[in-house]
Amino acid sequence: MNTETLEPVKITSPVATTACREDAAEECPPITQLKNILVPLDFSEMSLKSLRYAVSFAKQFGAKLTLAHVVQAPVYTVDFSYPVSLGPQDLGPLEKQLEGIRATYVPAEIPVDIIVRQSFIFEGVLDVARETCADLIITTTHGHTGLKHLFLGSVAENIVRRAPCPVLVVREIEHDFV
Picture 1: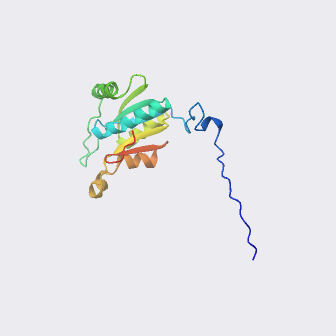
Picture 2: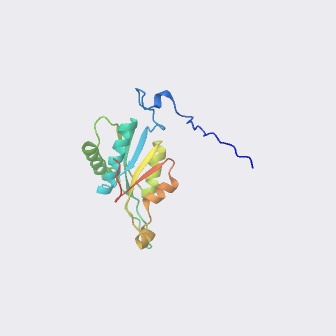
Picture 3: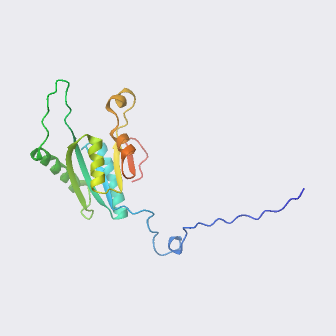
């Protein structure tokens, strides 16, 4: 039986460059570039948690934030009554509420767009993501399970399944990293 001594294999990283070494003077360039981060807000404390993450990402990548609120579209009932859609005068106060959130939670140096619209919630979020060419959506989940999830569905789940870009879902109870 022939027994040979194997030499250890030297593993080198193809992406390692002088600029990314620990002793280099400059920081490593980001792996990906985020230019526009979409943050759907429903004005709950939980959705403000996703905004904290978004602000951190925007600072790190120099990205613009798009704060969006989608008002649930009218649901038609069995008796075919037609609920009235909201007009611009109804959406104005919601825009002001988003402006207040922006002033309170987002540093002035971060550019922000504000969008309010009426649609089915997850469809409205996806439309805004497409229209603004969002690079990332940061949203929250309320963590409904069982029958509540079956009947209500999950907006976050629908966004994740159909989004045109990556989605970061922030949970209510988790290990925070921002």
